[in-house]
Image 1: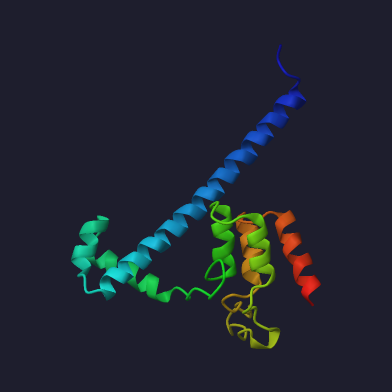
Image 2: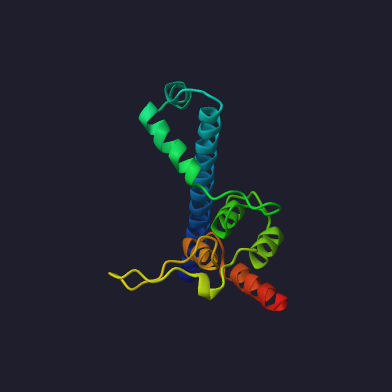
Length: 165
């Protein structure tokens, strides 16, 4: 017997949600892997390896190695005792399956460098939009928009932050 159309549509919806979750997790894993490759290239360069030798190991040109090393140098440092280098980084680690929900909520709810409003950059003169400071709570919202967090986790983070105040 064929399922009723409504049941079949519900199955389609669940399949799509599953596929979307896998795509988001894979996107986070790929970004984290690329970051780790960049950091490894930086460490090799700092240890004295040539960009050509690093490129040979990675299968990329020495010019691409230079860009990779520059990208690694631009990463914010890891925050001592934290699950990542920024709120978005922590959310990506959760989406990739590296940290659990409780660790995620605690890390983001207690993230220390959330900048007070008076330290946010001034708006751009040609656009009038203010850029969030690195590590600002805006990154938590961005993680929600990118799918690295769901609304239940976002709400749990907000509740936990409210309890602290």
